[in-house]
Length: 219
Image 1: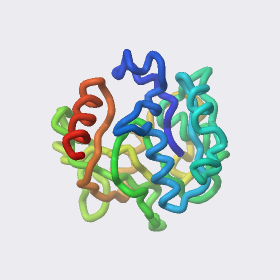
Image 2: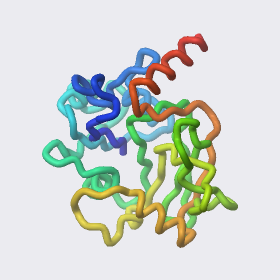
Image 3: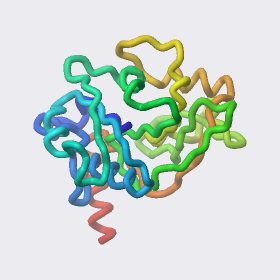
Image 4: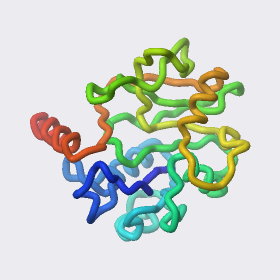
């Protein structure tokens, strides 16, 4: 699943005209980069949730055929449900097996992780070193488990793997996935890994410009 419903308030005025997921970096939209990475990982079925300017995503991606994928949509255009609510709404489309979730507004060269969850784990988070613009990290990584800490060293990359059961007990509506992460980390039910390669959260025009500059310099 690719989370692409958000308004992208901090990225305005760019996102006044296009959804955040269709912002281009290095000549390709963030969303289409993720679709290419999913195809390279031999994933064929993808759910994209729709919110702000979702029609433009459907117009660009369509059925997914030209990317070698089968794309279906979870429509939130009447009420964007945040990360947790959006995934929960899409569960009937995602099946009974563990599934990958990717935030559309990140840039990375990370291959889609091929994670096999152990029986005692309900989710897996890929973490990255906390970027300089963040005041603090999200989690620690201790012996392969994601843990809460007083001064966490790492930030969630926006790429995760979940069992459907991770959302057991949730109710339909708008909610963030973050409290579920916290609870799972306390219980020791969430594995993790660290990615130390190219990664950026495209959260503001300044971050986007900085990334474009870095990529240009690397050509």
